[in-house]
Length: 371
Image 1 (cartoon, rainbow, N blue to C red):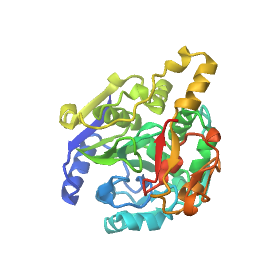
Image 2 (image 1 turned 180 degrees about the horizontal axis):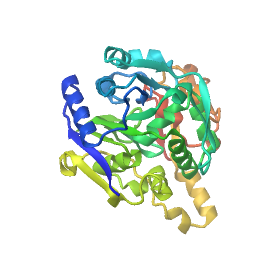
Image 3 (image 1 turned 120 degrees about the horizontal axis):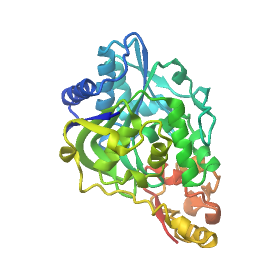
Image 4 (image 1 turned 45 degrees about the horizontal axis):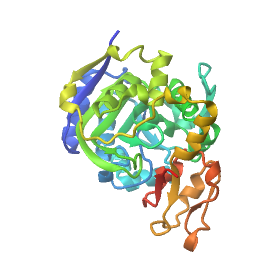
């Protein structure tokens, strides 16, 4: 059975153009019937930055998506997010997302209260504390931004739903699941629990390079994508920018579960062609070979991870002493007692290499280096 992904060429953030593309994608690959139902749209706001920096879903894409679901007869369209460090509503207003939601008939949902959601089929997690609005929704929509990711290589529709977990609780999951394979399984479990019925990808301008997902470089990709199968969407979009999805830990694990897909051959593209949307200039974050660790003796593998894995390095010159990295570090290894009250890593040997600090620093004061 085929799993369809709709692609549309879209070269700029003109509301009319974006809206037409989203409506067309919904014709090519329809979402579930939302008449008289509640839709919860989950965009990406890592932290409040100008839309042109490609840190989060562009507000025009959010507004156009809201309008599309309103016009499909939804009783209520809620849009909500939980940035790593920032008030949800304030962040939405600063990015321009809030105004787009309200103007197009939606309601902003401030994620701060939580509700327990069971996940009996989870591999690593049997329950999740999601934003309380999740329980109200008949349909969950992941509205993501295509970006490179220093820890997980690639981030898109599935990783975006990590934002259903409220605030700093997200950072604590890195402490609970410090190994990449374990964290990958956690993300897959989270998507099992979330049961997103539709997903849209903002890839008009993405983010690439080693600074992703927060401090990479904007790159014009010129397309939008949508699917009623969240893994199919991520698999297709990751492939279009040069990733081998089998080398993206959580995409491989999701494929192995057989919940969304059994093989990439099931994915069928509608609308624009792969060639029209393919990028040859996107700088991916490469994963090491998954077989390398199995080939090495355990003590060599352990030593290699300690020596060669990247570690955060802090620039006292660029640091603005905002203390966001100190707040988000799940292992509590960062303090503001460096030169002139700037951030520093207290104990490099205990670093989880989750890169939460690097992800949240909007001043590019944290670089990831080996040795």
